Length: 201
Image 1: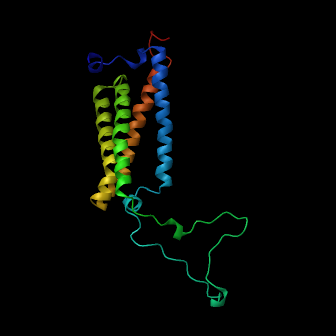
Image 2 (image 1 turned 90 degrees about the vertical axis):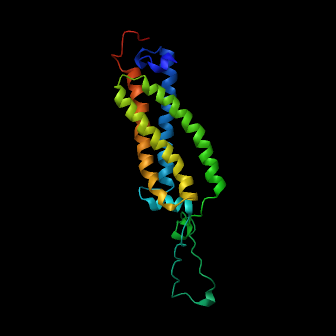
Image 3 (image 1 turned 180 degrees about the vertical axis):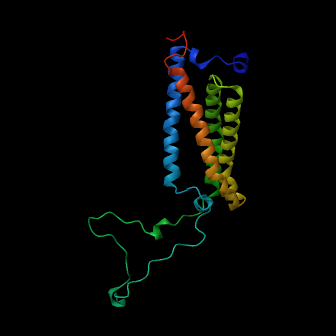
């Protein structure tokens, strides 16, 4: 336990240890990029309404397109189909979101509680080994941990408690993203910067 109380400077790690930790950090960086992609693709956005819509579904269905007055009833029902050979056009009617099932919310929450906490534990220990001040490292760790916990709690709170908790999604995602990025990038920098110490190699 003494090594965690006063961790070895990250720049003095052996070459193979720096390779292993660097690979772990690169995996995390790729994971951050995919997380941003999913966040944007799910259309969560910065406004609380996006998170409420994603987890609680549409409160009212989107309006149907107005009928073409030039068409007659004899022509049959109106169908909005794309032209042959052209890509399908996504209309408002296809953007309807349904409420997330309770089991899906809880399965995702359960899985992330274990996987995210393990990644945070490893990343936090790497960050503790950096040469920054104890106050700065403690602040980043506390903010990152709280933002992570609140971000994990937000979906079940929105789904089971109140839509008012949808305001947590974007601020906690931003806080988690910035602190995790700092805890990933700074150890990489200290491990491989040129003048990091005489014990290189």
